[in-house]
Structures are given as C-alpha cells and as structure tokens.
Image (cartoon, rainbow, N blue to C red; front, side):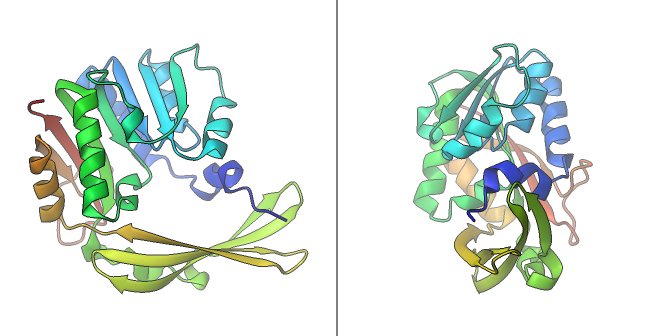
Length: 242
C-alpha cells in the first residue's frame, strides 16, 4: 500500500500557530497580493483569501496542489501553481511567505540564494518576506526518533505507522529518514531528506546579500524575541531595492 503523505499532511501537522502568525502578519502589513511559497495543502492561502487577499500558492508537489485546490471555496482569489520560486512574476506581491520550515529544504547556499533572489524579484519595493527555520541551538534532530515521533495514521486502506529517525548531523546539514509501516502487511518504506539548520547570523547575511533588511526576528510564534532557549527563528525582512 502506498502512503499518501499529501492527503495525511494536515493530520500529521495539526498545529496552526505558524498560519495564525502569518495571517496576522498579512493583515498588519496591509498586503493585497501575497505568495504562499511551498503552500502544501493550502491552509494559509485559504486563510488569506478569506480576508480578501489575492494569493499565488506555489508548491513543487502536484499531489499537494491537487489536495489544496480541492479543499474549500476560495472565491477565485487563489491561483494554485505546481512549480518553484522561479514561477513568481516580477513585482507581483506585497508579501512572500514560506511556512512549514520550507526554508530549511534549500540545503545548498546557491539554492537558498536563488530562492531569496526570486522572492526579492517578486516583491514590490518595501514588500515583506517572512519564513521560519528551526534554531540549531534547540537541537531538534535529537528528538527525531521512532519513540518520540511515532504516529498511527488512518488511511482508506487501513492504519499506517509514521515516524522519523535522524541519520547524520553535520551542521548546518541534518539528514533524517521518514518511515511508514503498513500495519496490515508489515511493509516498511523509508525516504531520506536533508535540512539546513542555519544560524541567525547566516540567515541575516544571506538576506543582506539578497537586498533585504531584517525587520523582526522572533523566537516563538507569540512574537517573543530570540533567547538562549528559543526553538524557532521567525524572520520578517523588507525588500530594500531591486
């Protein structure tokens, strides 16, 4: 049995602190046109559309876009696109957001710089880029074990176990495996991913090189500043020039 991760994504990630934060951010910024880059199942895009924003929701996974486009009436305010940051139109947005720790997927610096350049090109002068990255000081990878992450997901063909296991830590890179196990057949499938755990200093330097100024840096979704105990690095940066 193949595990449909896109269909189960919301069940596996029920917390919406990030979406509520970015929803408030869009309203406070007065955004009219927003980009949800790495939109997944489209929860944030639908929130924005509910406030009257025009939204371009982009994800490289066709299955995610299929799920997103099939959920909820957005009154024609969301354009769903399968693709990457290079599909963004020049000067088309007041706000570009990457949720779900998407920023960490760009492991190589050249790929990360390209995403920042594409976001900068899409933003109008004074536009805002916002994203979050796990703070390396919190060492989140130490909690990626079967015992700590095991979930059972109900699918149309029966229950499936789902968990993560860290494989290698070579900061800023962390490799981990995601496992699924069909409880009916015992079949186990593993997929390996690598994430970048960039430091606050590395993030700030990459943004400056791309023509952004960091406005705010939060350590949690309640807007608190970064402290020695912070788990997140939540970044809001303004586009200074084209």
